[in-house]
Amino acid sequence: LEATYSANYVRDILKVFGMLMDDAVDHRPPRLPASPVPKVNRRRGRFVPKPREKKNVVLTSDLHQLAENARIV
Image (cartoon, rainbow, N blue to C red):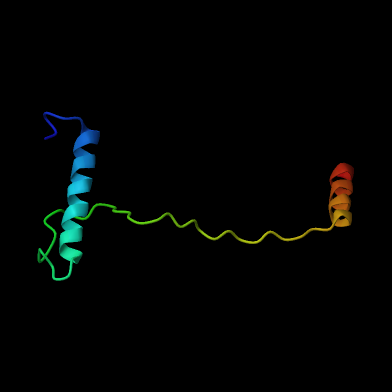
């Protein structure tokens, strides 16, 4: 395939074929005992963002003191 088509096209076709084979294996009852396509960094499903850490609340007076210290140094 790579001699005839672009690398991106071949990658996308193999990705879709791999998903089809995975679905066939996951089906109940399984249609295939194992997927013939090797696993390569597959991400499926809805995007779930990583939880963000909460920001600390800093008082304005503390910020003013930091600015004064920086100005003096």
